Length: 105
Image (cartoon, rainbow, N blue to C red; front, side):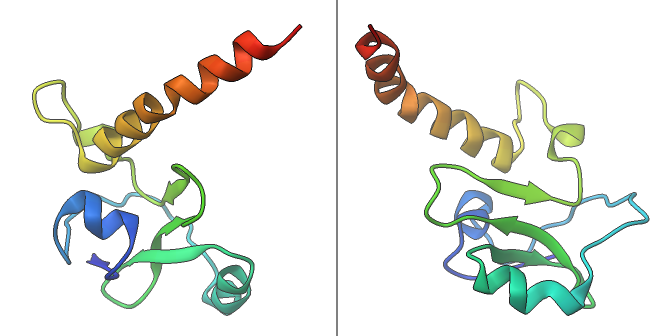
């Protein structure tokens, strides 16, 4: 899979390519790519024939959708880069979340 430059996925993987197991018979219809991108989604990972494998919302603290299962090869000793990135985003958002919860009447 090719990771597009200047995306969260490429930053988290620390590479321009990654190997992921893909078992799904479904995918994103390529006819909708331009429409999805115009709506704010950024395609950040594509398969060998250009098929969409990862999308993200750049303005969101952590919104990433994949057509593979990063948790399938993630372990406590060696977390998958996307899982580690998600955990870091959650940890970074904790102070803001606490403020929202405590500010309620």
